[in-house]
Image (cartoon, rainbow, N blue to C red; front, top):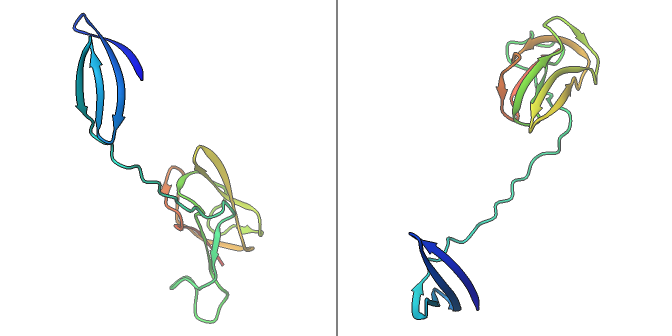
Length: 144
């Protein structure tokens, strides 16, 4: 049994909730008994979202069409590991980069994430600029 005091339009109501069974509550308001039908809230559903581990960018080892002539070295696409906003680009087309060197900084979930080059080589294309929003898996930089 729970007791409450409600003031509605300057009128005081003493409310006692005696029993709740399924969708019916037995209440007493200022000494008068009532059966009150309760709208059941919708059942809450829990949805689990699996996020990939927050690691360095994913590298695709397949050549990019039109990026280089047949038979030459492979081109690697550095991809966004998670959705976010590019806050700085640390390289430019033509730069030689080493494996592990930071090439971009991505802000995601209010954290700065340094995106390193997974392969050493020459930057042949930068697909994003500072301020761009990117989705997980988006191409960021192409390295040859």
